[in-house]
Length: 136
Image (cartoon, rainbow, N blue to C red; front, side, top):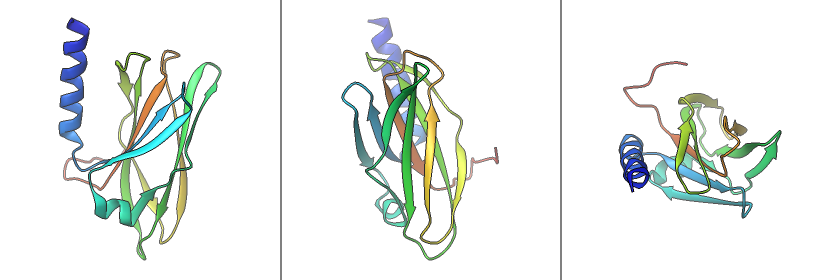
């Protein structure tokens, strides 16, 4: 019960910080990638998360890839993050936010590697810059 409450608290706190983010979700057991929720439809129009991502294992660590395609005629600076979960959907951690620059009509493949062998599910988040961002 305590684990469930902790999971709910972490999930609610995390979702509150990223309401404008678009998601891609990976499940290594079903080998499925799903896109959504799309919380910023304008961002998805300008920088689309493509449905050709994958989740594999490399040296017992979950390794995920997602491709992002710019549909803009100008450069875009975007932020992305990977989050990791175990088979019970318990959060195992999240990477720091990283930024990428997409040139007009550019495509970029982004890779995330779990830090724990227990990871069986991942989430990729993509968002526009915010006033709280710092270069990393």
